[in-house]
Image 1 (cartoon, rainbow, N blue to C red):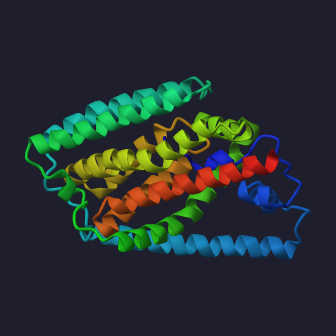
Image 2 (cartoon, rainbow, N blue to C red):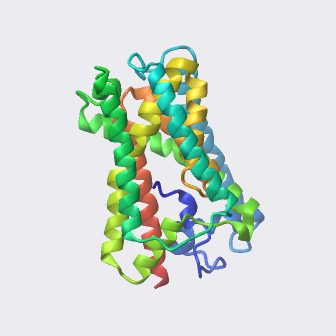
Image 3 (cartoon, rainbow, N blue to C red):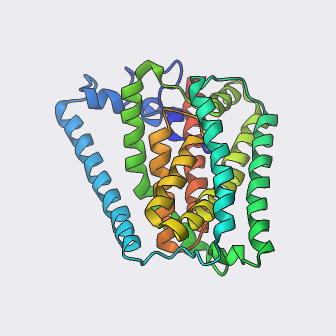
Length: 309
């Protein structure tokens, strides 16, 4: 359900030759800048590239430092309650998710029309999975909420940490999308749900817009972080170490979105979410990051669609 930033790359009917708010919002400017646009002077292009390099360096420093602490055994994620039965659950769920993602990619990301019913059905499915995992832990007397660091957390510190780590995650995420867009060119396709959202904005379908926003910003982040960072990563970290846990949970997270354009960016985002979880010890931080990321993406997509109406 996560809305990736690839959704506002290559927006239909956009005019790439116009350097205005729309092209900035949709990232169309990234490609002319990289390729040497006539819209900007060489000096301006150099400044933009330099700024990008600085932001990327800061991002790598922030997450590199967290990764180093995790490697040294100083991560804050709790894993004591996870056991062999959890590995078996992950094997089943992971195989199912992998098979579903493979089918999507083998069928060339065939885009079909989706509806509010599809969105709700997807949310209900993930709610059942997340609820089942928490129930499975509680059945074995494992305190799931304490395990995920969801107790006794102050609101504003969580918000502040989430904002900082999300800001640091954006440079590599956007870079991945730029490189994938350049690589795929006209073959690049957005997630179907983003086409659905743009269409809802263009036809001012309030019900569809609200449903997409509520599910994408309020529901999906909570459910997906519980499943991937909370349960999958916690289990894999305990039995195989943090590196395996990060790679596997990030790979599955990126794959289930079924979008080739957003695949590397979603993988990088998932790595950042996992490291933020390690840095803080509470799942509230990646949940807030995820929600803000989705909200920003939908907000920029809404603005871009409105400017084209």
